[in-house]
Length: 183
Length: 243
Image (cartoon, rainbow over all chains, first blue to last red; front, side, top):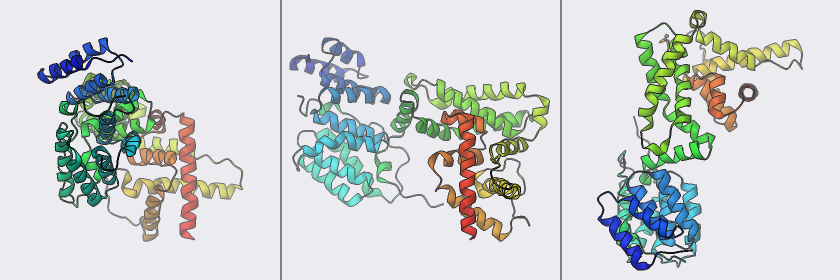
């Protein structure tokens, strides 16, 4: 597997973050240099999700996880993407290996909270999501997304807004990029 | 009207992604269930196109225009490229309208004059042909019950009455009839999935068996078989309900 050097990777991430419309071509150029780099596929999935191309985004996220099954943040985000697409069973299946993380790992807690949420068990869902946020020092942007979910859960049974902000609760933020392990 | 309580999944569901997921599964993974969900989701669009055509030209019965609209919708679903970034409604509407207009022009005068309901009933009757194994009287009694089940299903509120007929209960709708009808509506949920889909699409949506076959990617013979076995199952349950 050919990986981009860390310096080159940072260059790609910076260029994407600096471009007005999260230019996909920048990532694709990186992929011509290292077609099997899971971080680039994850980044590509993030960019595609951000510009409203969910079918291709999912394919890229799946590719990232297939290339690096232990890339935990990519696995979490793939499951999250599936969940927000209404594919709860697939999300749970994707998240399965995250159960092997330490009990107090923020991703494991988030998965626990979201699993409760799928089962409509709102109290333990909020508890686990909050514990996850407290444990998460690695990935602050993710906490903002989780907080949005917590806020919405607390609003139940008050009517939930008919439309959710596509990029809020579910965005794959570039700020998260680089965290998680790649083996 | 009371709003249903939000579920946990509602909290995180992103409508755009959920729709994309359906398209992905329907178009690239040949998932018939997702295709049917998409069809049901855009059913009102097809009906509104048919209604619009009907308001302008009343030469063809509205039910026939709806069949043409369903056909156009199915074609649009199968030809739509979800990767192009065009909303499906905008893509499908002119195609459905085109199919309705072309089909209405093609319909012969005789076809147009024959009541759609009559044709639907004929089609239904054909699928209910009894195998002739039992004695003639039992066979006839079964057939009569099966046809009555069809009438009851139409009256369960599943099928919208497009003729604006008087919907008030008449002498025909005695208490026993209405109770049986309620039992029938409840029994529908217990039918095996395939049979349930055929019954709902035929009686609720008013789709012909040919279009249901296209929707479910089954042969017409298989759809007829599912219809027959569903009606037979309902007949057995109803007899049990009465007993």
